[in-house]
Length: 113
Picture 1 (cartoon, rainbow, N blue to C red):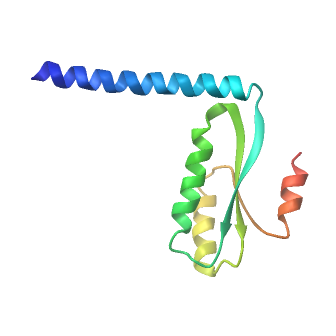
Picture 2 (picture 1 turned 90 degrees about the horizontal axis):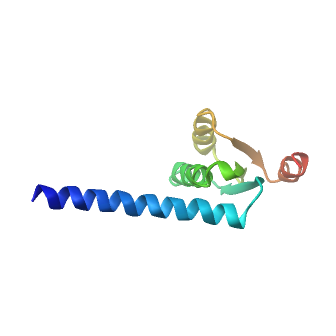
């Protein structure tokens, strides 16, 4: 019984490893040079889903790995004070994250090229 569990665990880890190798090779072939891009996350007055949206965007930017330079921008589309506080806390985590309003967006995106 123990052999079956150990073999299943090894098989699962091997499948995950093969999937990661395929992902890295795919990124290498599709995007041979490091490129920078932005993940824009519109933020409205709904503070309930703000943290989930931002953490999802940050995890997607980390998932892309070292092949890309990725920055997450939270666009203020009428945030209330609670939402701004949540964004500020996530901003303080030290990740590549920016908070701006819609009028500043062309400056931020255009200024970094």
